[in-house]
Length: 88
Image 1 (cartoon, rainbow, N blue to C red):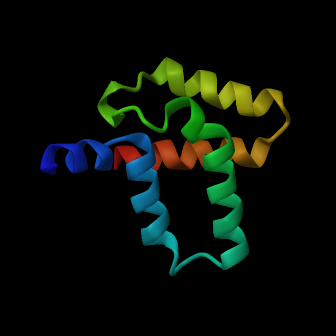
Image 2 (cartoon, helix red, strand yellow):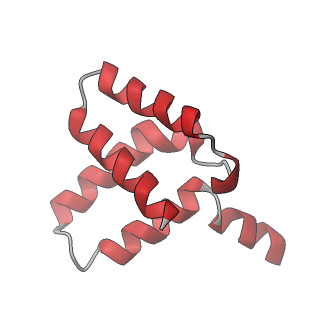
């Protein structure tokens, strides 16, 4: 069980969820809801269950390009922020 918990916390979804929880004091509820909706709609279905260490830059770029292609520039910004926060 400990290993499963460790693996879950190192997935993109786990890291992003921790990041969002850390940001709640800084963000208003509407902003947090937009970020969470964006991650749930665009990021988590494609890469959310993957371990952070296994996600290649090209996969992140493909995700960002997919978001940009549908005209969701702000979502692209949030995806880049999430990627950046995960690396720090």
